[in-house]
Each structure stands twice: as structure tokens, then as C-alpha cells.
Length: 227
Image 1: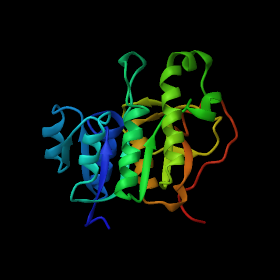
Image 2 (image 1 turned 90 degrees about the vertical axis):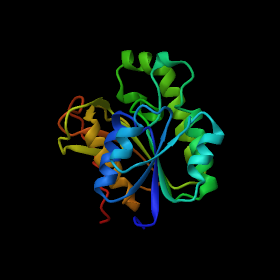
Image 3 (image 1 turned 90 degrees about the horizontal axis):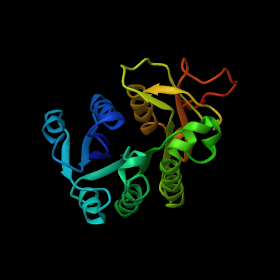
Image 4 (image 1 turned 135 degrees about the vertical axis):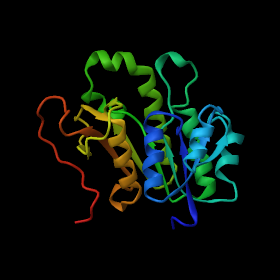
């Protein structure tokens, strides 16, 4: 499968998306990146990634990226914005990606959302919920739209993100009460593992570092290995 098909990655220019790109290449996947601007293009192409310039908020751009000649195995989206950025891609951009993925008959769609979205709002302190409220509403709408699309999906909700190297302590859980922080590189490793795991199909999973969980709650880790 890896020899013939691509992973379309939206949000590869920085942050978690860039870490996922590195992880996919290490796993020998062919990667196509949808970029809004040319800024990161030279660096990504030097890594061996095929770049398509386009805005996720533009339906035509998204369909051009996804309905090209290459066979797409999966779509991974990390796109989103900060509260001050005006029109954000958290919902509309991801909606366009989901619609195009349905047309392209991709086998899996992995959406990077956030702890605090949907039923995981209980995991955030009130101040964080107030600060991120408008963004989390958009993320929850994107989650629901993906779930209702009929695509095979995995929704990953990371906790607070750090940019340090991977610790190897990243874990997943279906328990929406769990909050904490996690390094972006560890999120990327979990995403790549979910890509290859049928156990993650049609699951909503929170992602935290087991050493950086808020409080000392008892909860069950989610295993990506079939028992």
C-alpha cells in the first residue's frame, strides 16, 4: 500500500503537522502536503514531500489537492487557528477536507482536535475553557461533521502542546476527563501509530504524556494493539 498511495497532510508547515510529516516519512509513506503559502515549500520538498499550494477554506483548492492523479490512502488534518485569527479553518477548512475525502474514497481520516472539545470540556480548567471557547466550538463542529460523514475516522485530542523532543511517554485514552500536556513529537508518533491500527478506527482519543497528567486520576489507557 505504501508504495502506491499517498497520505494527504493538511497543516504540515509547522507544529504538530511538521512532526507528523517527519514521522510519516520515517515509516516510508509518500506524503502530499496542502500548504496555504509558499513559505515552507522549499523545506518540505527537500524532505521529499509533494507540495500543493491551496487554502483549506477554498473548496476548489482542496479538491484539486485531493482528487489528483495520486491514490490517497488517508487524510490527516492538523489545521486550526488561534482565537484572534478571525475566520479560522477549524470547522470550515476541515469540512472542506472531509467533503473532498468522501469524494476521493480515502480509507481513513485522522483529525487533530484538542482536549476541551466536546465531552472533554470537563478536563480543562474554567479559565482555559473561557480563553479557548470559540476555537473549541469550531473544533467540536468539525469532529461531529467528520463522524457523520461516513468516513472511517480517528479523532485525536491532544492536551497542552510543547515543542521539546519526544519523550516516548505519549498515551491515548477514551476517558474524556483526562487532561494534561504532551510534546508535539509524541502526538505525531501516536498519530502515525493510529494510521496503522484498525483499533483506532471510529474512536475519539485524548492524547497526553503519562508523566504530565493533571492530578492523579485513575483511567484506562487505549491500546492500539489488538488483543
